[in-house]
Amino acid sequence: MKSDLNEAGSVSLNYNGKSVDFPVFKATHGPDVFDIRALYKHTGAFTFDPGFTSTASCESKITYIDGDEGVLLYRGYPIDQLAENSDFIEVAYLLTKDHLPTREELEDFEYSITMHTMVHEQLKNFYNGFRRDAHPMAIMVGVVGALAAFYHDSTDIADPNQRRIASHRMIAKMPTIAAMAYKYSTGQPFIFPRNDLDYTSNFMRMCFAVPAEEYEVNPILSDALDKIFILHMDHEQNASTSTVRLAGSSGANPFACIAAGIASLWGPAHGGANEAALTMLEEIGSVDRIPEFIARAKDKNDPFRLMGFGHRVYKNYDPRAKVMRKACHDVLDALGIREEPLLQVAMELERIALEDEYFVQKKLYPNIDFYSGITLRALGFPTDMFTVLFAVARTVGWIAQWSEMIGDPNQKIGRPRQIYTGEPMRDYKAIETR
Image 1: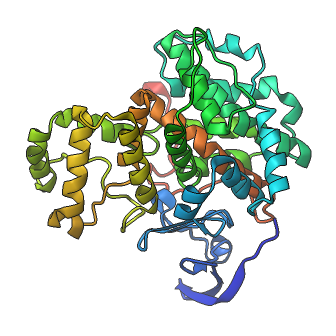
Image 2: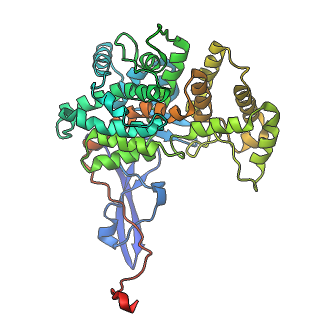
């Protein structure tokens, strides 16, 4: 990847009586960036930025977020346009190849992904080593990490062809691995993928079909899940994406890097948000208890907070939530299950959040996790599968980010610094004198 950093002046730092100039780079969108790579060299000092919230760790052309304006772009395209007009495979091509495909390019890409959806037959034995009640994310971390042992012909990151094959294999096999994790937890036999189905329909069939009868994919339900996958594909340098890049910076094979990303995604502060939103709805239980919980949410002295409302990044309406809201309501209408108590609670909470002055003023809009949790519940997935579905979708973004990192001429092995606040140097004392 050729660097497109554009220098737009410099900034001076005065420290210990010495003035040092640092370049300022201008981004396509977003704030200017101070290039402090030579800070320690010239000053002997570091910066302190826990969580890296004010630090750009890399240059990227994949995703852009403007939280204040409620904007999310994939390769420059607004997320709502892609979710409404495209499908998973086309957006996957966009993220991994950097442009929307021609019809011929799309057909070739779809064929390549489809031909890689099966997993090595011996991989099935790997599942038998887990307890039946194992969390499916634990299974995902183990199985995806083990792919390097089954497909060691595509682990040489210096070979562009092997990188391409590994990328296609992971995008293709992740739904199969996820569906197998689900089937294993239910005690049902694994269902093999079918080449005549699209990516998302194939996944739904592998999850919900049984050998005893035919399974027909409902196109409304499949379309809703396809949108969930598109909306979750990438989201700038979040915790799991940064983990993939950090693991990849050491030269680790791509399967290991994606397994590391899955482990990071598993955290409740990251990939578990939609599960937490659904748990909250279950805690509320019924519509008549909503005022009690709304009052608690407004009480500054009460630690309770409404899950699925507001967003750390988006200070405006989450652009993904607009698409997800429509898909959610389409699913509820198609299944005719609006009378379920939990969904009634969700719909009433949604109404209050969009109309109540307190929520509107604080911009606590329903976010994507609120709607995706309800939708996935309606589709029939248990809550412990929610983060697994997130991982299926995010694999595309991880692959795109990993591939970009491999080709970045500025990339170095990740090695954050620290502020040491422990004991000063001291001499060892024999145990008899302590």
